[in-house]
Amino acid sequence: MHELAYLQDLVIILGFAVIIVIVFHKLKLPSIAGFILSGILVGPQGFGLITDVHQVEVLAEIGVALLLFGIGAELALKKLQRLWKLVVIGGFLQVGLTTVTVFAIAKITDLSDSTALVIGLVVALSSTAIVLRGLQQRGEVDAPHGRLILGILVFQDFSVVPIMLVIPLLTGADLNAGVFLITLAKSVGIIVAVLLLAVLIVPRILSLVARTRQRQLFILSVFLLCLGTAWLVTKSGASLAVGAFLAGLVVSGSKYRHQALADMMSFREIFASLFFVSIGMLLSPMLIIENLGPILAILAAILLGKSLIVFITAAILRMPLRVCLIAAVALAQIGEFSFILLFSIQGTGLIEKSLESSLVSAAILSMFLTPFAMSYGPRLAAGLGKFTRLTSLFKVDTVEDAPGAVCNICDHTIISGYGFAGRELAHVLEGYDIPYVIVDLNIENVRRASRETGKAVFGDITSQGVLSKLGIENARELILLINDPGAAERAVRVARELAPRLFITVRTFYLLDIEPMLEAGADEVIPAEREAAVQVAIQLLKRHKVDDQQVEKQGLVIRDHSEDENY
Image 1 (cartoon, rainbow, N blue to C red):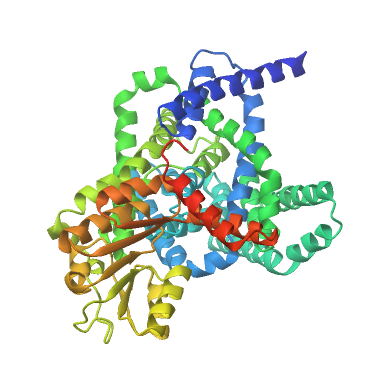
Image 2: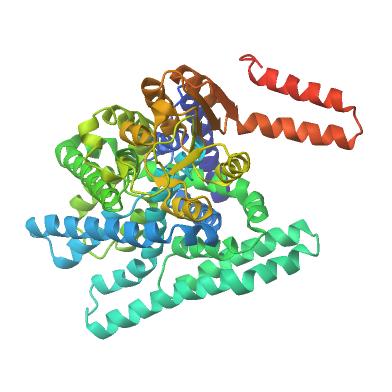
């Protein structure tokens, strides 16, 4: 009957989770917060419907492994190459400054060196799962703040490998230089081996399996790569979750990674939900009530301290105020790898039990609050962005010297964003001798645009100073092709104030973005979601030999439907 009890617990957990997440969806609240709340309610510290937490922890461990495998698989190596500066410099600054700061504070309270270091490492890590999901839902992964956040998270995830190998040394082993160097070499060797597998071996294996056209065999192979790599990594002393993350990086080097993610999506979502539920089960409402002061103090210190350090990190990287603020809010919490670190030292006495309980409670509350904070972050940034004296402190808000880019031109077009669309538009304008200037916050895009056009500057399009120096008052059009809906909306408002007669065109991803952009003052909003539907329909009808006039008419019908609020 033990199996039936196990099944009963699973039914209770999923039942509560479904009901609460539906309610949260109706209230437009984040689903992850709903899963954590479900764990609080059904756990032994809540209604007591689940008493054997260990059973859930087994499933949750599989869940976090699949979750982190998916995160690793989504981090394509080519994307990491483009983010290397943000990963190396931004990540190192954030993790290093956070660890040192927490270590210093812990030493003031007379904690041992080992305890202070472990707490510093625990606090330094943020939740890749929660933050990335929030960025993906809003389509902000490729926005300037999304790139910075992703870069820091990647460094944090990679740093877990050496951290997990150093933990045994902190729990009682001798911390001599030789052991430390061997541990460091082992961690570097693991990362190098994983990257070599991702580039040289795994793509060939998956290609060979894919040629059989046997979907079951492909799924089995992906699971084998995931669990096999994770198991091998655990043999070196790292955790299963770290191994699964590195296994995802192995698969990310293959062109079949999207199919691998699609095949594992259902498993990942179910088990990952159990992980967040299991996190909620660790939270004791009575413990919070009894130790409310210390827990709130730790929570406030974590949120404010990490926010400040991330803000400083972003400022050092010469990011604008908006990016600094949104990144600071998004990375203020403690993440899933932090719990793995805490679980690995349980029973060692490295952290005193009452302090560990308060730290875990504060960590869970920080994760619970993160989805709400991320939704509020852009509005906070927009509000503070109105203070010109504050934004002027960040040099990135002014256009850098770029000879030939802006030379008293007028009747010109300002292109914000030099991705594929911006590049093609610049080539079209060049061909017809229409004056234009390009502005972007991605320094790599600016360098590329400067090489190709000689008319690019580095700056924040939401800044009044940048727009003025781009000659917004004398411009004919402003074309916004950036991947940040919040920044685009603010740019429209600022541009409309400075140039009431300017024609403003905005490219967005979703139909839901049309109304806010028009209310902000845009003249034309082009959603990629609608244009994709139009092009798919047109190409299909052409293949079916439909008359060109009818094809064009059908395209207009789809565009009309996109403007119908009840459609």
